[in-house]
Length: 143
Image (tube, rainbow, N blue to C red; front, side, top):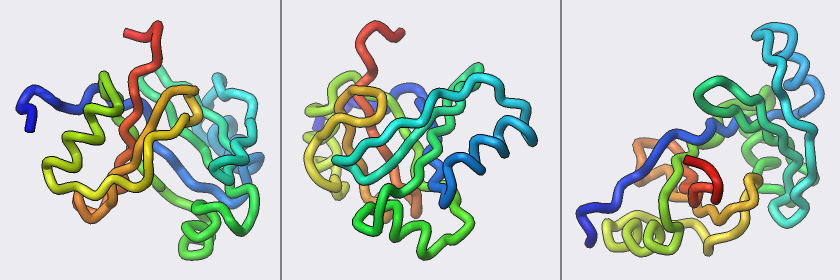
């Protein structure tokens, strides 16, 4: 294990929603959010997403594209939606995979490209007090 490995800044909080358009309106009307990205499909992950940009972070709104989506199961259990995951940046996703495994965590799947266009992994909630953790390689050009 490398004792120097650690998570970086909070990048975003993922919120699963049954209706992306309605959720966007909630953030606009209720919370006054003005900087919200245009929704886009990620068919390889079975989701449609957009980001509510905040001064210090983002909220990722996630809607399932179909019943095969992992978010679909979450919405079935939580019909109104809810917090799905918390995402932290890491310098190197492959180092993160090695370290999570060495430290006894369950990494869900292989690194893949996430909504920010950079490699991501997820760490099982059982390893993090019930919270699904996304680790995202810091996008190039940031920080």
